[in-house]
Amino acid sequence: MPFIVDVTSGDVEKEDRTSEKGHYGGTVLGLRLLNERTVPGLDPYDPRTLLYVAAGMLGGTLAPGLAKAVFLAKSPLTGVAGEAHALGPFAAGMRASGARALAVTGRAERLSYVLVEDGRVSVHACPELRGLGVAETTDALRAKHGGEAHVAAIGPAGEHLVRYASVVTDHAFAAGRYGLGAVFGSKNLKAIVCAGGGAPAEVADPGKIAALDTYYRGALATNPLAALQASVPGFAGWIDPLAPGYASVRNFSETGEPGLRVPATEDYDGRAVSTSGCCPGCPNDCIKIFAPPGGGERRTGGLGQEAFLSLGWNLGIDDLDAVLAANARCNDLGLDVVSLGGTLAFAMECAQRGLLPDGPAFGDTAALKSLIEDVATRSGALGDLLAEGSARAARRIGPEAVPYAMTAKGAELPCFDPRPQPGLGLGYALAPGGPRYDALEHDLDFDPVAGLGYSFPEAARVGAAPAPAGRLNEERGRRSARLLRLWSALDALNLCVFASTPTRPLTVDHLISLVTAVLGEKFTLKDLLAAGQARLDGMRAYALREGRDAGADAQDFPDRLSEELPARLHDEPIAEGPYEGAVLDREAFARARRAFYEELGWKDGS
Image (cartoon, rainbow, N blue to C red; front, side, top):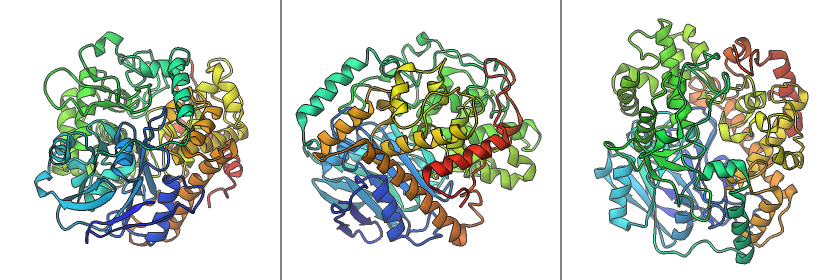
């Protein structure tokens, strides 16, 4: 099923994996190829590494929850398997062009792009695109291959091997985490272009798909999270007050009243570029495009849920236009907003503490734009330092800076504070690919008092009964592992977490019906969870392989097998508000970790 593309020689082969079961053409297949086609211990920038991009057997189908493509490679940030997902139209474009999956190896002699058109794959030089942002790159490639072509591109950050460079699809939809854009850059690969007038992906039961679509559209009025996503400004447009301790403020250092403003709904007026039709086949439109009026590239302003927190409160900034401009610029340059925000916040705290002379200051909105440019192009000593990410930057500054790098496995933490939600902390520390906010459902959603009661029966189907959000014990470990397995299943099948159980409209039964309707094969809850377990096992096996046989990159990735969180989260309780006193007790965390591993059938720490 996947096309294997060697960008050094231009050779293309197609490998038939259709007889294999359980990979669904997504991450699990990509992990198999990583293990089969690469030797352990390769530097992530070695030409022999493999980059996997897939819509899979389900992604890109015109149905609710299936507008998702996966990008996978050995991460330059963590040294283990880095997986990022892009919503939007790219997966559908990939399927229409005649490819479900690509595996790219080698390094092109000149800057190049891979073209998929009418079921054929080829490699084309494009030195004229060097240095261009995502928007100009996408425009230039569409001028060559048609305005309906779909493009996954990198900007200058990927070309300069910023370790958290992202890939951005169709102007605005980022595959953000773990530095997959830098892997593109290391291969001299500017973009993947999907062109041709192919028909949408076929499904086995169109009538069932139509019925699911009708149900989902009706659920937009009754499911509160779906309704929030569909509304303007949407779930990424923060407008509700945030309790102290819920989100990171100034590098997780301040857990009292932050003294920062949450935007009002009307603050987004005049800033919407596009708020509908972003994900083909899905009526929810949860990724909306916002940018300040006037000036700069606006089309790249796809707003994910983490942007306002990462580039705003985490930096001591509450200027909405500054955050929206920074987000759009990050997408155009190809920078992950989570790792960038975490790295800048680290630098700001180091400067505050006298560890980084002439470093940036919290709340310096005026400096944000130039900081982003310097990091993306590795300009100056500070830009080059911060392009390495906060874990490496801390080691360069010195041991006194290490406590302020808020990372797990070398990757910056999402901005949802795990102290009042310890299940998130377990996910950040123990997920084998590194911390990702959408890899594990929020503990608060299943709190018996404050949670989303309608989701309790769904969560119970996978063994995650309601429990007080702040409780950290063995059962929290088991519950977190079960939820991680469920959400891993969604990732394995390229199903969208923002459409799916337990909190969104597609219940377990709907998901089973959806997969059956697309593939025409019997599918059960057992199959769903088996796919999730297979993905987690594959991610873990790859991490252990790279840890045992680290080779030349051992010194660069000392944290790849770490199961620890920053000491601040264990030592500094939430100062005030409804979560006052919340902290991750070390002994309780260790007990929960053991239960987590037992639930997944893993040996703790090995």
